[in-house]
Image (cartoon, rainbow, N blue to C red; front, side, top):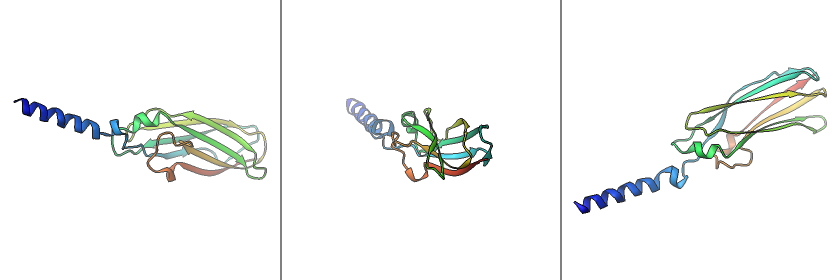
Length: 143
């Protein structure tokens, strides 16, 4: 009987040690899955940009790692190279397949074409599994 109890304890410990929550071998795969914003806006007009991020991890450990990171919205005036918007927001704990929406309210006072970048975990604090899908780019024209 003692032998079976010992084997059971060893089995439980080996399962726990190999689980992602102990060894952190199942990083999140954070992706932007939706976006909503105008392609044009007026000078000094306040407008809203929305982005949705989803965790596509293959296990149950992505959540504790996603709360360590941020998302960034960056808008740069194409003609001048001036960084007009550079906003950061913290992410929540995102379980596998969970989403979080980020809403940015922006007012730009100079007409021009702006390169927009929405970046998930720009400093890679989550150890994201696939870094190549973390940046969304587009253009917003301010008249």
